[in-house]
Image: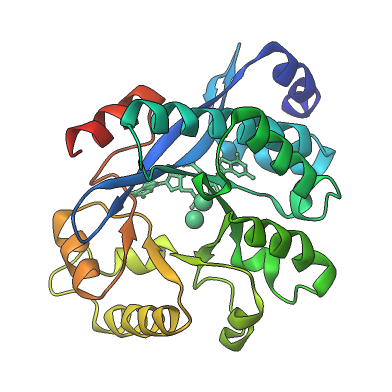
Length: 259
Ligand code: G
Ligand code: G
Ligand code: MN
Ligand code: NA
């Protein structure tokens, strides 16, 4: 595959870049952070989304250096936001981790090094791991995540609600945030909202809060959805209603606009 063989050189040549999508507090509308989403500016094919190359990078192992690069850029960006935004700025950065990064032995040390080099507190970083990556996870897989959580790095369970995981299993996982999958948000788009989706989200929020987990909702496209999800008790939202993924300056403007 042409894209696969081009990946390592693309990293060396600096063809990857990151867009940031804001995470907004549903209670007061303030920007609390952003998710980092990697793109590839391919010299022939133009901008390629992660769905086009992350699976290839996972297959070849390039995801480890690429993921490290994404984390380094994102953490530096978080420092810039925190500096420009002033003291006590709570802006955080969410970075996605592939399953193979979780099993890579260097994960904890790489993360510590990146935070130290950037001079950023661990609480500025949230690592997103998909629910499916942790289904049936044994202690060896959870150990690095526990270490990171003890340091103060937040761990979020991404695409929550699609993985058929055992809910009782949640207590074992060192996560502090559930990211509710977009499919639930879709049910709130129509009016009246899908009553089954309402009940499911209500149940998840109640379970999450009783376990001291925050709930982030993805894919919010309308004000009506945002209002419905706020009433259901969700904490944070992400989606086109607030902003599409964009360059870092855009997030700074959004964050300052409501400061
Ligand atoms: O918005 P978008 O098409 O960029 O994102 C598609 C998917 O790609 C998301 O589910 C996201 O989890 C994944 N993704 C985006 N950036 C990264 C990254 O840096 N690392 C990994 N592993 N996945 C990413
Ligand atoms: O990690 P994850 O797959 O959850 O990453 C988010 C993905 O969802 C990205 O591909 C991003 O572009 C996409 N996305 C973000 N906001 C919205 C939205 O409001 N609606 C839809 N349909 N997709 C969104
Ligand atoms: Mn994600
Ligand atoms: Na997701």
